[in-house]
Length: 82
Image (cartoon, rainbow, N blue to C red; front, top):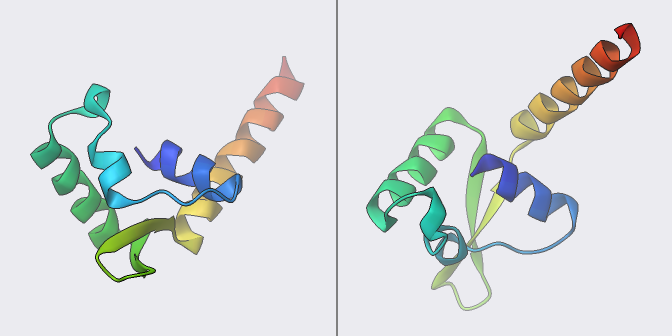
């Protein structure tokens, strides 16, 4: 789920809570909503009101982006070691 959020943010595409909850392959709506709350509590995402205020856009935090940058560096290092 965090992958999808980061990819959308990197592509400058807005992703809403409803968009994420509608992804049936990841779990039920209740499960996905709980996972969003957990990611928010851990500091990986933030939810901001979009336009009219009823819809919330999901955005990765600096902490989440930093995590992906570190993973990318480690993958590059591992690929060079092969």
